Length: 323
Ligand code: NAD
Image (cartoon, rainbow, N blue to C red):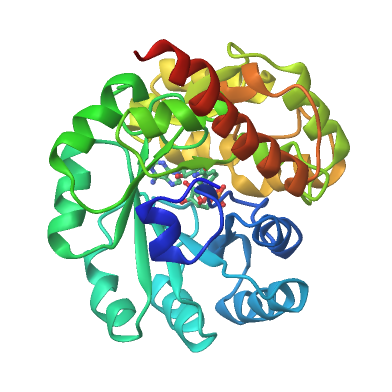
């Protein structure tokens, strides 16, 4: 067992988190992660309406009696989403853990705090982590440049980002981006974190509710199989490097606007990729950790392997190095 301030605060067995992933963070995966003793998050915006989110939370509760949370990502969307109503749905469902991401969660904190919800804010820079601690979030998920989805615009990988953040943040912090195995967990602990967040690694699990071909593409991909889109709009997103990603990048270089690029990068097409396994149908998020993903285990096998492997590294090789 690896106990940290994070496992204590969130009442989970292992310091491992399955963070919010658009179209992937559904009840099948989140409940499997919870049953494996880690902390899973449903993704609020994957559900078309707040009412659908209420139903998804209930479905997840039917599959686990362990703690799980809901991710709310606050980034530009092609169609405006009613964040306040999603927050109300989360609170009225009795959810006690929320992962915010993408923007300052300040407007939502009073409501969440009043309802006794613990908030983990995912951010991509030291300064945003410091601000989030100041405004009263309970924990930080610090997301390095390696990550899938939105890495911010500073491009600082975790070997520098995490210890720099650990120097100035005092609430529990987990590392996110590039983590996929036991070595990553030990490294995160050494860099000042209390655990790790994984997305891409959890996509390639038996329970992830996405097409087998997507899981196989993650296993087949390596650390160079991603592309960065939407850089010119200062809304960078790391995605699987397919023909649609290159098309979006080409349009950006031609100076096209979001109105023109939107139909190419829309999440609605990405959703079809996950449903049908047609890898070239749209944009889909994946991280550099693909270079470390070589199989499709169950969540339980994966979490146990990482925790047991980390203990073995700490008690074995590392202990022998220190005299
Ligand atoms: P969407 O279809 O509304 O938009 C597709 C992409 O275009 C997203 O990356 C979005 O941020 C970007 N975008 C939209 N409007 C923009 C604008 N005005 N300026 C710049 N960029 C703009 O998004 P979706 O796929 O339905 O996803 C819903 C939410 O989840 C979005 O906030 C998205 O960013 C986020 N998301 C997060 C991840 C992750 O891994 N963290 C992955 C996919 C999507």
